[in-house]
Length: 101
Image 1: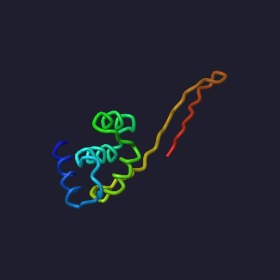
Image 2 (image 1 turned 135 degrees about the vertical axis):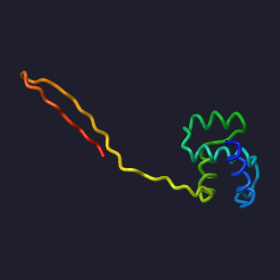
Image 3 (image 1 turned 90 degrees about the vertical axis):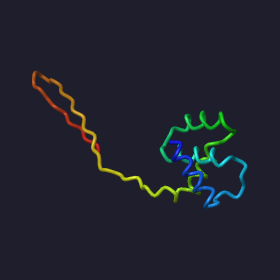
Image 4 (image 1 turned 45 degrees about the vertical axis):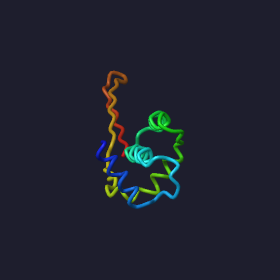
């Protein structure tokens, strides 16, 4: 994790994306990584707020400024959820299937 964070820091410094440097590059890199890996807003805020006063909107903007450094694209697979329920009505056994794609 530390290597990945260091690599993102280097990329941010090399590309010179941010005009103002009010927040440390390491803090921004950590926020961008957490946003990329879909860490919950509550957890991100807890972790980053202990470092600096940072808001989730700032992290979102940082990520969208730098989303080109992540060459891995999310792939979506087709999934289906299937539920089965068994019941007896008038002594007759019934099976109900429900599927959501």
